View 1 (cartoon, rainbow, N blue to C red):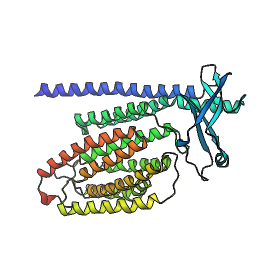
View 2: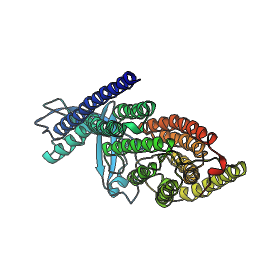
View 3: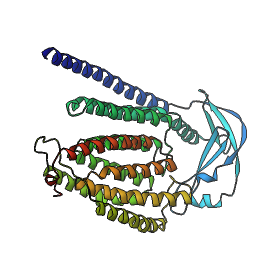
View 4: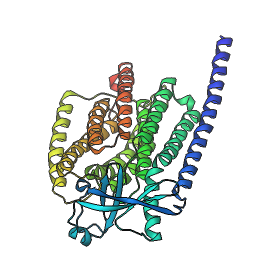
Length: 407
């Protein structure tokens, strides 16, 4: 018995050492990527050589501006070559062209720059070069931010390793590793004047916080609500930055933040008699489930109709039909989220079923919006929801129903 215990202790020490080595490598990778990206971005264009002229087509499907926009970016392309011109709204209104003659220049390092006239000024060259280099170095900056988030993920598993099982550690780090890969493979474009790198960092932070919160819920830990507060703040920032999903933003601000605080208090009052790390949980009755479904349908129709009538402009979604569909899906996801929040507050097992529905709706919205890195988060939802449902069900079956009071 002593030999077996010593073997597991030695194995644990080796795992920690290996984890620390990987952590150092991830931090170094993040630093190197960030330094390389910054060096490229702030490099000087040098002298330019004129090449030739070419006709570029205007991409009208990327435009959706009104008088509220002070700067209107218009994209012209010819194959893989691209030129972005910025206009005031008044200039944009008078712009009645489907193509433009672009003058191609090349830097000493072979970088192509395009202008709508010959002999550009030094300021125009510097602006065009920075724009091109920002797009070129985006994978490096995405790698920097994603490796940094992955480092934090590994650090959490190392510091609080005794609290998590081997499966839970593997699941958590697998999801974060997959999110890192996807963030580099599918970089985000800028929207509403916010750089795509910042948007991707918000996505990764949202993924990290959400799956950590989900994992703690499956373990019946009250500390999930502390992480959840950070989740809500991140998602409010995302809604403001992208200027979309206002039903989710309002629900998060006025429902999720207060319910997180109240739930932490309620869960603290219902600790398991045998294990202080566990909270007692229970199941819902049939008539209560029907009432919840009816409430979700009504909320979806009313809120979806109201928000779809608002004139809210965003650079993130360029199709009116798509925007309306997302509004109704968002309203439904918000309704399911509210039901889920109440289930969690009352410690009902059915919150996992609500998570299934919510994850499916969120996945559809992410696909329609092209937010592919957030699909990794939904994969985490689906897998952990199954795990959590099984754990809660086993707990309920092993405890007397009369112990599991609502308050």
